[in-house]
Length: 231
Image 1 (cartoon, rainbow, N blue to C red):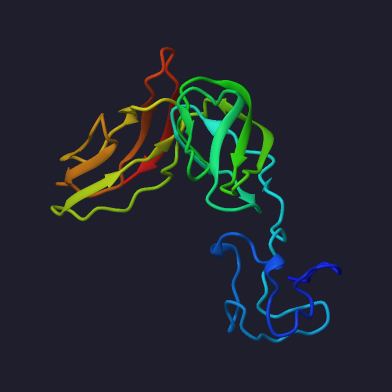
Image 2 (cartoon, rainbow, N blue to C red):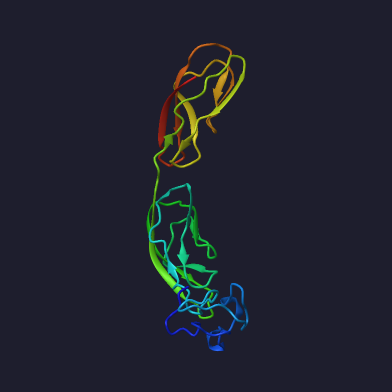
């Protein structure tokens, strides 16, 4: 810290004068010397002195938040600096998207948004100084339904008469999903689990089997996606 030109901490001889000492201990420290003992000093910088009042003003650093996908977990940390920690967070005005909440201790917004749209709100952070400082920041979160998409684009081969298990993955839409074979067929002895997307079994024949898997979400008006695969 570089001290103010009129600070009582500058060149304070062998001891820090009482006027420069705050009323409670946690705010002052020395690197090597402590409690009115001799300490080094040089010009406008006294090594080891922490000037009361030199802490940066409490400021919310986060000015925007990423969008959220409906029905999917959301977890974002709102950052602040300055003031005296720990901080306390609150929603000053407006409201978070339905299903999301603000952790008062950490500033984390998390949960699963259940409705689409843009929610505008203002967050407030309060520090723990004797006379608390506060700061506010207007923010918004837009929630939309992500497109349902099968993310698995290929499957490993299978050895004849050896147990096989691979799961076809998807993202977006509204869980839970229902899986089915839209066209073609799996190798003899293998099946698709309609609830998990797992393809498993023991193949009893050789060759390449081409098929298309289909996933359907659980929206009131279901979304679907298909993916051509082969084993």
